[in-house]
Length: 192
Image (cartoon, rainbow, N blue to C red; front, top):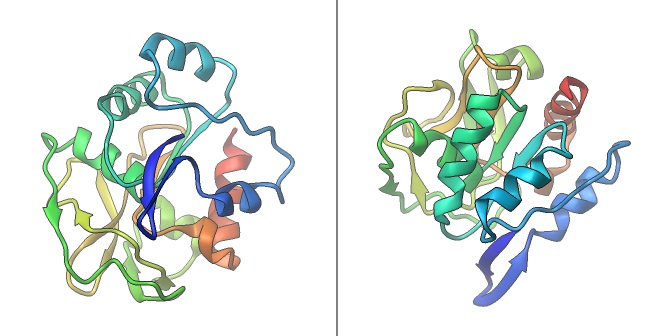
């Protein structure tokens, strides 16, 4: 959970569509505030089989401690939007670029091309999928494997195949709740 702004309103938590989407799976959900003492975060993570790092408006210093901890402990991790950016930035010296045409309100805003040698391709079995887009920043590069790009060359997905599951996507599968989203989240849950 984190502070975030949507429609000019400030919130603390996660978007409701994430919880609504996850309710269709037989899992227990634990929400972890990102802004508490990191030792407490690690203690809560010990109760978890995997972590979803959801979207948000801005980074907290604990985001990068969390990415490093999850990576080092090989805890299955799915990053969504800001969560993916935190994963990628941890592996590129914390660089990001402003992007002007990727914060769109449409459910299906643009296509992404999926790398055929990626885990994402193995999961979805598709070269291209249509996704939503609600981000103002993007990764210029990362040492993680890039698994998806937009037509403008924006990094839309990353992964590390040396881990049990360490994958991030720039879009919000929980908001689309379509076959691709279900398949991705189900794969992640089956890893746990």
